Image (cartoon, rainbow over all chains, first blue to last red; front, side):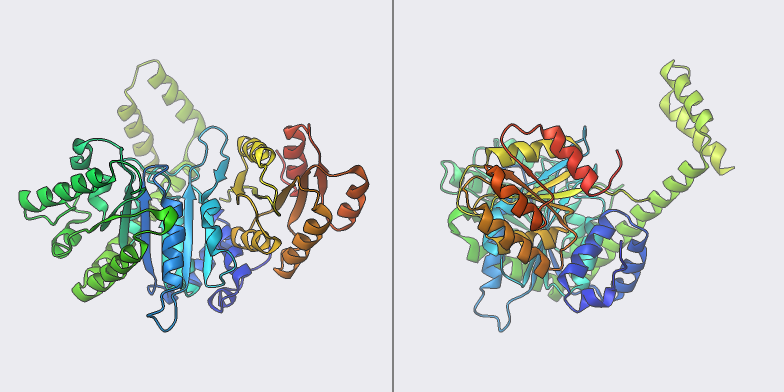
Length: 342
Length: 134
């Protein structure tokens, strides 16, 4: 592969940008250098996460949303927008069918928009392993906004909350009763809630349930609405909870296929950005994100070092002992890891 | 540690709305461990070349059943070249008369497939074209 010039990426060379993303995605040796060169030029982009169950209309919503931002007449210059669309990799074949672009045809031909599909490649949190690094590159390339559409997510795929400044959770009518809405997980990470497919029966009910859920959260503790239920052991979001208590997640009912309700959503996304910046939560979120990134990278590095030093024969032997129920898995792990760090 | 995956864009240029074939191929390539980006129906050559650029694909597969391949394919090849994507391999599938195939290949098309093609053939041709060993 030919050498990629980081300067070209900053100058808006789309081919260089695209090739750089491939290098990052493949963990190519050039990846380190590119990230090192570009990282100092980042921190400008507003990262917006869009998540929700499969088939709730995330891609269609993103299409309309980006169109709205690009056509916003009130701004002197419309923001440059990048989209990272993540779809799942098959756990059996390693292949993937990335189909989010199908819904985004409206954005084609607009040089101020860059869409990149990304396979999750085994990562389980709703994003791919290198999605954060993608955001870094796009940030340095001068995109004012980076929209990240997650894998169709259920209840626990909340990685996007660590990466994005603003999280939009998309629901559709008929996806479960009100108990679903007070369970932990994806609804908690929402800065903005969307009930899409509002032309379907039951949309008003779903929106009402979500609003009740938000009110309950607000009344039941000092925690802010929609940010209910931290545990003491994992204070991942605690600073953000405390700081963000004056933001109440709005609930939007939208028909994305017709563009109905999109303008209001776009306005609230901008409002959330302003809120984060005015209150200082923006910086806290950035610090949290970088801490998590660093954490994850150190973990990967340590694992790699351990794997390189691993005596394969010993590993197979211990594994066999586990299979024969001589050791429990936890004993085996202690044995293998302690041996290596002596 | 590099983890190189072949990326393929499957596109339907022009106005025909029959994408069964495109979907069958997309699925077969996915099952072969490739990453397939499907663009949907009614794409212009500009849209296809733009998507190929943004997605940095190794291969573009065009499915054409409308009979307009002699116009659409050269146009796609042109636009790809304009975007600096001369190294992208282009495959064409659909209803393509035998007589038209040599001209398409002269234009830079790597292979042309008709109805009844074994999907495994397509998979192995693509792997060979981008030079990845199994």
